[in-house]
Length: 369
Image (tube, rainbow, N blue to C red):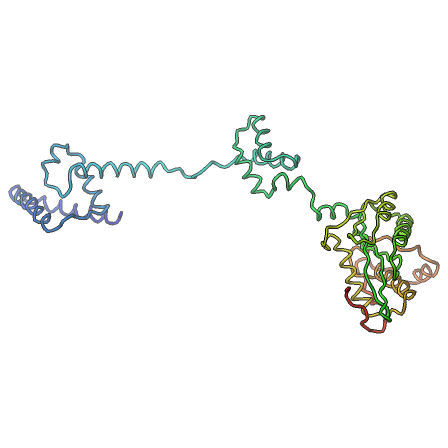
């Protein structure tokens, strides 16, 4: 449109320069000829079409004339239409000059955003309406929706989700005081099913395998609980929570025994093995690395073999928590003499992985029925 307007202006300028050398008589003849051509065009064209540039030129030229003179002119449109075109031009110009640079609400001051985030983090039970009320009490005028938008942009969840503690947060915060126990099955060479009781520490990944039996009675479980408490006391392990599944073999007497000694029993959800994921993962490791490669002759052979695997796993497993684990047993004189003849170990070198003892390969154990 702008290029067309410039083109028309240049054309009119050249036309004006053409009229300068003309005499008054020639101009009058041309003026009389032009109005005569307009009725001829109106008879041939039903309704002429005007572009935006045509409207701008006609409105700019004719808006200075009063209404009575406009009515006597021979035009393709009515005089009221000319004046309406002029008013539209003024409205568009005014609207273009008054458009704000930044549309929408002005941004919230950074100090107010920092205050909102601080109130939300230090008061987990406060929602956006409570924070809005506290800001109003301080004389800070801000909408409640603005407070909600600030919390949403910074990833702060609503109040009900912030008040509760998720299971992952609980495990991370209480890892040093968490134990997990479970019973898993193993089979002997004759096909006898044995039940193995195992306990793992969450922080150091240290495993304990007290015993295995073919008939896990309530008295046997309670006795294992007593043995476990004595081992924890000797190792100076202060456990506050013990995670177990909802197996019926764990009786109320077992829970009461642990509760009297200090640790609180936390049961997992129904059919939710992920809540005891460390124990479940270690059971799979035990099956792949030990049970699937070992010939278990009878019930007396399995506990001895499990103790060997327990010692290997706690001392030579490739896991970062091995450096944090406490010593499993006090060093004997034989160990001290062997250590004295060894060269000092370079702390920058990484400990090499020790392979498990060679055992005849024979896949006998299988997944639980």
